[in-house]
Image (cartoon, helix red, strand yellow):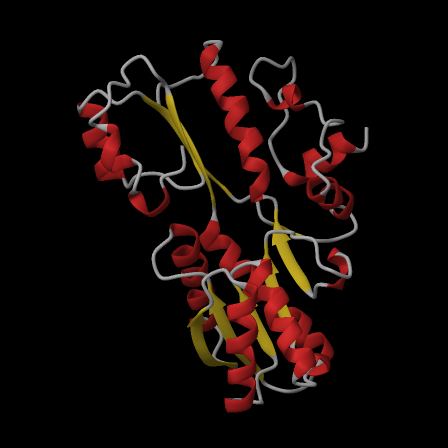
Length: 265
C-alpha cells in the first residue's frame, strides 16, 4: 500500500486485516499511527520509503557544483516544489532548505509550488524569469517540473545561462542525456518491496516489523545510464532480483550500483 496524504491508514483499522500482511511503499503512516494500527490488530509487516530529504539536499549540491564549474556569477536559486502536503515534496524541499541555510553564498530567490506539473512549471518559470532574470539555478521536485522549466527558459532565451535539475530519471523528449541533472532510483523500490514480502512469506525476516528508509537516489552518469534507459523502456527482465533476497547464498545489497551491475551481467 501507498499511504499518500495519510488517506489509506484512516480506513485500515475498520477492516479485518489480521490474516492479511500489509507492506507500505513510498509513504507510510507516522509512528504514532503505526502504533495505534498495530494495537487495533492491523497486520503491518514492514515498509520502505526513499530518503527524499537526502535527495533534496543532494540535488541542490549537484546544481551548485555544476554552476560553480561553469560560471563566475553568484548562485541565484529558484525552487519549484511538488506540493504542500505529500511527504516526498515536503521532505525534498526540507533537504533543499537545509543546504541553502548552510551556504551563505547562495541567494534564494523564491519557492513556488508547481504541483508536479510540466505545464504549471512552464508558466511559473516564465513569470519568475521576468521578475528575477538573475536566476541561474532552478531546483525542481521532479523531472516533469524540470521539463517545463527548461521549455520556459528556451522560450525566454535564457536556457544558456540557467542550470536545471530534477528527480525521477524520466525520459526527456531529446533523450535523458538532454537534462542538466536528474536524480533517480526510487522507482526500483517496488522491486525491493516485493523481495521483502517474499522473504517474509518464506520466514526469512529477522523481525516482525522491518521499516527502511533508503538513500536510493543517484545521479545520472555513465554507470547508471544503461539502467535508466531500461527502466524507461520497462525492460528489467535481465536482472535476477533473487540475488537481493535473504534466501540467496550471498545476498547482495539493494543499491543502484548493484542493480546496474546485475543488468550488465
